[in-house]
Image (cartoon, rainbow, N blue to C red; front, side):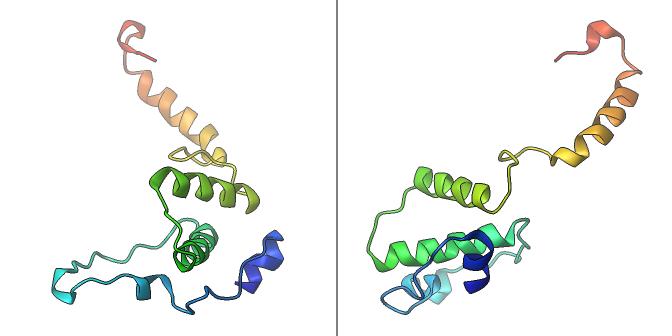
Length: 115
């Protein structure tokens, strides 16, 4: 937590009021849980910031909806220096992709190339 606060200038509460982590707030029967393969995040610093924020919101008994989560993730991404749009390719990959695309399109007549 402290590393992110120092790096970004963002301030987080030290711990949620309950002192519990996010998973401690979820009550599910162990037989109902289906585990998926653990995937590595492309943006671990944004994920960590979001987990802290969700912990704090749960501790304050706030309602968290999908659009709010998306906006907060964008907010953290901007503050952490991530300017890429959701679902877009990294800027540094675009020149290489253009060359590859031109090579592929050479095999087609112009009237068959759309957008």
